[in-house]
Image (cartoon, rainbow, N blue to C red):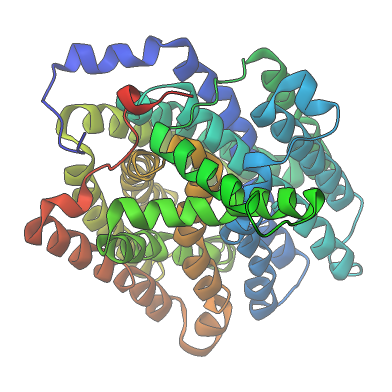
Length: 460
């Protein structure tokens, strides 16, 4: 199966959103989206209001590097059962619940601190939230990919982004508005309580059937037989080595075996795709504050209206992927993301006009929503369902890690050169992804084939 699909009617494409599991992604997406702004954009605004300098804000944003490192513990989420919880809920849902509890605890810790006097404590709490949130992402992504077939992944990505953006609205606009009328501590307490939505959803959904392709199963069995051979390893050590190879080594070997030399180009493309908009996002909040917008204005326009536009873009992206295919939409959306990010450089030259802010945010978030659906569908298509959590975590980590690291220096760039230079620089960071995607598509279409395990190959 390739990313090129036969073109279907608009009505048939829209019907996909009636699928129950597609609808379930709305609530899981909400639970996944809620923590991000609370350790990223919203936290930047809170810190700036408390008088924290911009360079420090930029470095604090490195707590979100944990989202880019989640591939390190994804094999545990893929294979390690949790005592009691896994027997009760299953592998995917048990890790979801544990992670959601971690996010709740971390947010309540943040709600009890004051940045100006207890910044270290706040950062530690933010690390707990980021680690738990990244773990939740691993388990939700695995559930999403395993719960439905490949042709529904675009719609799953669309509703996931819908819920995700609703979580961002609450964590962005909602938290900012609450802080403006009450306090930031109250806002973070309410955000922590909102994680109950995800926890309830975890109990309602069903555990997907775990399927392992015949070739994958035979590969792992060869490892087990080898370890049972003349090496005569103790049973405990043999089991540990077999588990490590199956959970950690095999997922990476499988990806490179299926994609050959194209694997390097695919990974490079994944690492470059989101650099522009993620880097830009670190300083968007401080820009609004320094331009003179109030917390309420930022909350309503940027964190509420803007995210609503992203939701529309995400749902539109899901339909466009169904109708036109993944790769075509990837290239188009990558171009749009760069162009709309450059609008922030122009915004930095203007006064605090709400209409101009709304215009820029509308363009930026619409393109971002479309890009998100196309990219999530593409990453999902690359996974072998025997290693869903590990491989998808590798892809999404690679997507986030370069951008999060580069974004940590954003405050220093603004301090040294100003907002206009920074946003031009952030926009231009997206050009390599456009060039690479276009080159690979024209050079050899097979590099973008979704070399996944088909339903006919799945036996276990």
